[in-house]
Length: 427
Image (cartoon, rainbow, N blue to C red; front, side, top):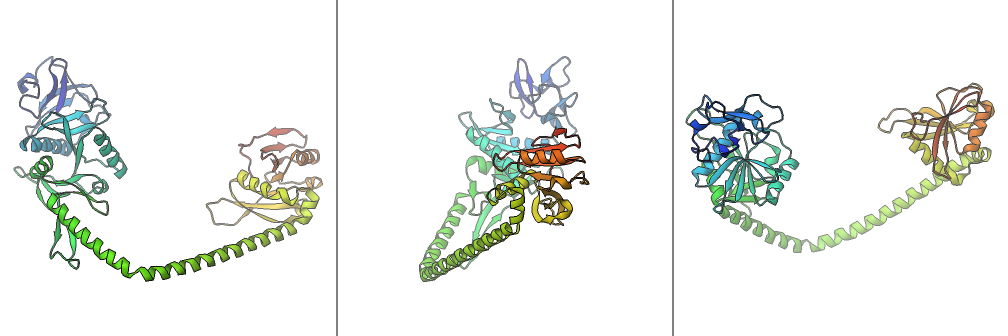
């Protein structure tokens, strides 16, 4: 249900206003046969009705799922009406459910200034919203020169980053809506650095808070920690005086700490030098480990013709092709003196499992496990595998010279079945 509707001749109707905002009476729309009114949000047909609480509104004969006005809760409905009535009681023109010409926002309540320009949006925000969404929607209003105050019933994360009020629903008939969070004063007595200073949220009727905001008696204050609240200029000045006093004390402390900072700079320089030495030692250890690994594989390089120069790009291609953590084992006589390759998923911490063999002797391929991947560096090695295959083989051709990868299945009949660089077979 909503408070507004559109008539083809009368224009926009607002059920919260005595003349419906267009010079018509409620009797002109309530229970009038043949009258066609449309929802300003979805364009669906709506009808005039007064609820049990005698609150006039418009409702859809068939409620559409994607219309925000049709699916508002009763709390949302009542809160935005209260916001509109509070703004009007404060002497401002306020309309419900107003959209921009570009349709990039729709305000629950739009307050207009003395020049009849949109001035401030009052948003009854009861549904969940992230801080990012709240800031984005606030900025969207700001680009059109419109301020905004978000009003909620519960504690929401976004109320710390955008101008907002938290209110209490009247518990019984005759009570007023009450603001209990968002309107604050600065408490600091006595006014010395030793005395604690803090922002204290104050409780007041919602109508008073709206009047103070619209009249400029309170304004948005951003604290140093990023918290946003409404407060009076006098409290802002008090907070500024405290900040200046703290800044002066900090300046004196910085002067007294100059010698200490110099000593800390020397210590940092010494620590940096130590880190450089440690980095150099780690680099030497890595170089030694690489040298030892190359020495360990010297016989393998000699047999396969790979060479130490292409070994590093080849191993990088193995890691890239598998998408897993890789380590190399020993030369395995049981696998044609090929180099064993072990792998495990990167996000797991379990054991490495045998995943492939690099350049095994083609003559040893008689009883080869069907799902064990053979890794070779070029087409020459692939041809050897094709010529010697006596069982189906999975072969990954990872060429470190061209940087290209290809995955094929080799059959005993030497028929090559390309799988492609993005195929399902991986070591």
